[in-house]
Image 1 (spheres, rainbow, N blue to C red):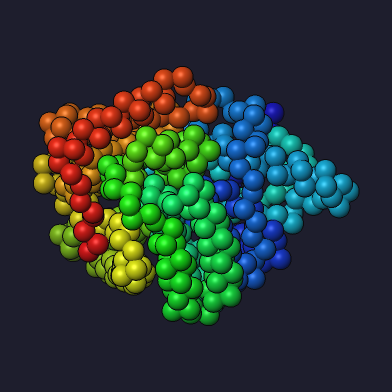
Image 2: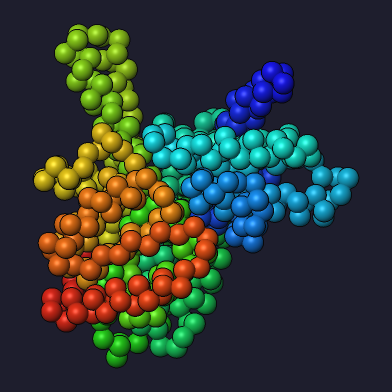
Length: 454
């Protein structure tokens, strides 16, 4: 028994980590659909055979090998990888070799259960003898998702730049969809347009990403935006503006949140969801912030070695964050000249919002930092309501709800918690419909205004 347990623990260290993905098939879970496919296209541009797996079709499998106490995205992604591998084994028969694949499953540190997904799923995969040799490729927020070890060291800086750019472009495509779909001339035009746009941008990242030719990618994106704005019917008046915050997977994974954005649009909303780039920027900002604190303490203690180490990290993460902001500004500036899409939050500004009234602290961490401050910022920028979308029992989002509910009540702005666990709740649509009635009333009293692009 002891030998078996040792093998299990050894598997968590030997089969989860930063493994070379060249000449392997990199299996990417779908979270945000547009962003996931653009990241995979960027990998392919750098010579990695990356595949975005079919999602949610394996949910029953995921639930079979989980207890229900896990965070819901763990069940979804577990089902995705198990179904994919089972289908591959059936397709290839005796030629199936798990060592030809790497399952790409990042993680985060802190109290969120996300940090344990890949460990738990490693245990699940090890329960299938035919899948034990499959490696799980993990990158972590502890080092701001450095990709060292996954691809060639010489390619890593260029890949990180191209990958971040793909995240921002994915955010823009999302914002473009949410901007035009509530005002489309004919139903279905916006969805069809975004599908074509996604394919065009995937091709652009495969071709121009490795060269870091971002101007060519932006030109391609700009021509698509010009086409997309013609879908808008100028005769349709503005609608109430609804902001979304919450756990990053649930708020961006359409199947898991039962397409809540489309439901909101059905009842008369224009929606803006928190971006993927916001979380990436947060990981860089938080690492820089931690090293600033470490630098201050080492200065007080006059520990020269630690002081120099923290100073170096402050500069590294500070430059990384500066680069990310620069690229974001480049994309948003160009697109906002063509169509009024909403800008993104600056993480440093969100921390200042929390400090104003001592609402929460970045020392605690988790997405609650972004969600609480993001909600306040939505309200200050004239939004007519906010949804908090998250997995059932999610700790950071439950904290967000506890902090923000009385504040939203005082501000007289509609607010709704929408937790999901894969079940269909009869009252969900009624709750959204009631929320939208309140948002319509707020809109009639106060109007709306767009986010400040800066």
